[in-house]
Structure formats: structure tokens, C-alpha cells
Image (cartoon, rainbow, N blue to C red; front, top):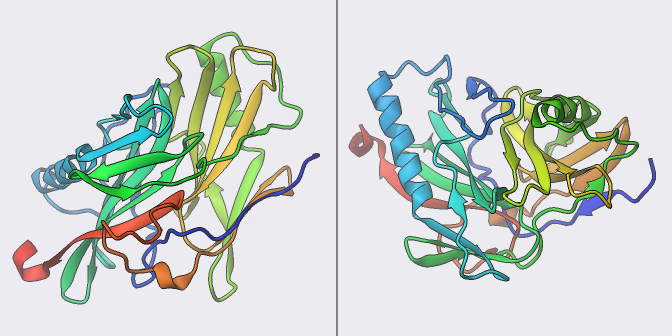
Length: 305
């Protein structure tokens, strides 16, 4: 493979270091070729279905309060894909419970976000986490307040080496895109130097086609256990005149991340600084990062229950 390794320097975003990332009991919605995903409960989640459904509705209510726009198109707000791409829970450890959402413009994902809660000490904390998938700067408001405004494109696409010709149908491209994803691999390295290979979830989290019919694509997850740590974006160029397939990566963890194609490293996201581990939403710090996460609410456990 030719071309330089893409290296993401530490930018100003984070995942909370006070609570471990969950890797068990994640429940993925399997939908290989459709835009609709339905939330489901992890096997370890023994809560009544009505309680779980209420939790999902709470997360969806949070997601609806975001308004995101490209700076280049301020009159066109992104559209929230209403149902979460996945919903997970892990009551056995810190009671982490969350859902992943995506925001679209002209049918293409522009931002991926996660809304979740976890138990820490005697409180339940809620956090919002997001990564830009846009081609340029964007601005996000939450409850009318500007909370996130990355100043650069969120991802950088590269041609998939030696990619095959595109099938003429969406069904054919769905099969091909999953086959191409298997050529990629990813790994994670924590602050203590421990390295783990991440597992590709072979079914895409999300399939999409742009409204102009020029791009067909999918979001894939590389996971530790079943918890997403790296997002792979694969897109087909339906208009011709360029590479048939291109790829990009987005981080979903603050530690050292690497990705390879056919065994050769093609992407590296360096660790983020530890100082950005406990920000509250609305702070001016780190709003210009393409990846960021913020606390939004803290509730004493006795009040929550």
C-alpha cells in the first residue's frame, strides 16, 4: 500500500478517566442494509422493559435538544436519526447505560454521538460524547447554548487500495462493503502500555446513501469485547471519476489507537491529555476538538432510585 500514515495529534476531547470503559453486555442492532436500527437491551440488563424503554426515551430526549450545522451551510440543520444505532448496559459494574446516535445532512452522517450514564461513588453521572464526521467546521448547540464547535474536518478520507469495481446495486455494495471492512484491523493501547486487538463487528452500525445518489456508505465499529473504540467509515463513489471506495477513521476513546489495512498501519490517534477528563458541558475549553465529551448532569443515587 502507498501513501503516508494518517496521524491524529492529541486534540482537545476526552473520555472520563474516572470510570472504566465497558466491554461486556453491549447489545448491537443488526441491520446490514437499512437505515433503521432499533434499540435493544443487553442480556445482562435485567430491568423491566418499561424502565429500559424510559431510559432510551430519556437519551433520545437529550439527543433531540442538539442543533448542529455546518458553518458553510448555516441554514441547514442536521437531522437526528431518531432511533439509536445501539443501546448497551452493564449494571454489574458501574451501572453504565447508554445509546449511540447519528446526525445527518443530505443523507450522510455528519456527527456521531453517545449519551450515557454511569455510577461513580454515590452519584449517577450523565455524559455526552461526540465525534465530527463532517468535511469542515461545524457548530453544535444544546438547550440553546453553544457547546461544541470543531474548527477542522472531523475525518480524512483515503482511497481503499486496489478496491474492486462497484456493484451496480445497493444489495451488491452492501456485501462488498462488509468484505472490504474485513481487510482493516485496529488496536488500542492504554496508559500502562497494555495493547489489545479490537474486534470488527462485521455488521455495520449504519448504512446510508446520500440524497444526491452520489455516495453509498457505512459506519463500522472496532470493539474491545463489544464496546466500540474506533469507528471505520467506508464510502463508495457512485458518481465515478475517482476511487471507487474510500475510508476514514474516528476515535471513540481517549487512549492510543491504531488502524491497519492488510497489516500495514494507515491511521494513528495519539493519546489525549489527562487534564481534559472532567469537563462540564458549556465550558469554553476544548470546544474546538473534533472529539469531545462533557458531563451534563449529576444525580445522587437515592434521588435517581
